[in-house]
Length: 63
Image (cartoon, rainbow, N blue to C red; front, side, top):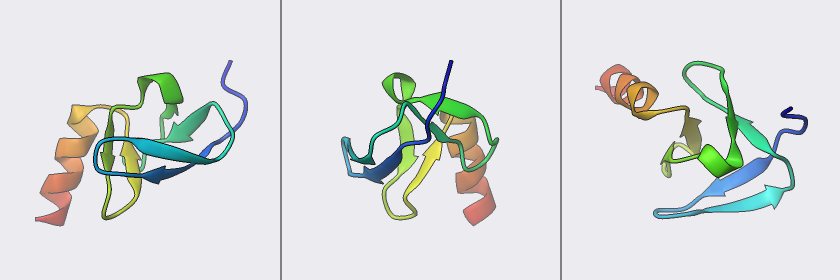
């Protein structure tokens, strides 16, 4: 069960946990992403994405 939202600083090839938690929220779909499954994010916007699908949708929105 996902219980606490983490605060994350997204870096180019990694991320840093600023405030302990076990998940973040996808900025496109609103789905909870367990930190151990977090693979997609935007460093400039500091946004996490649930999967490549949401990351692609965000790129389309921004273009």
